[in-house]
Length: 77
Image (cartoon, rainbow, N blue to C red):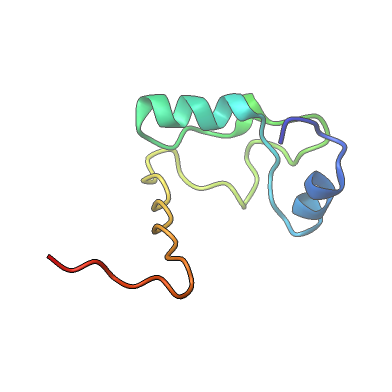
């Protein structure tokens, strides 16, 4: 989240998630690995030793598959 006190951040906290700033996403992408959330937690988030946090050496989550438009015909070669 860009801001800690938004409805979206509140919902994440209520569901047991941690709320990190955009720097966490950029650093994980740059280093091609999942970093600990602790240094990137936004105000009011769970502590860095939260149960919801994955281990430091966990692989990055898979990228979403491309969306296919409804009614589009698959291309053939």
